[in-house]
Length: 75
Image: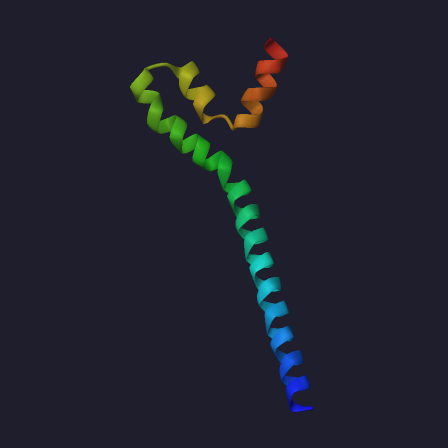
């Protein structure tokens, strides 16, 4: 009976750890997705003086999916 309880408690701990890791992975993914436009904007602002071109800075500050949409729309 004690070993049965021990096995059940260890399974419960493993399940809760798995649930916690899954939640942490999901939260990191959601926060990273919301930070992507900010990262793209900062990269565009940093590279803009190097190229001295507003168009290049604008392209680099846009998120990748907007650039792909424009590429298909223009092309």
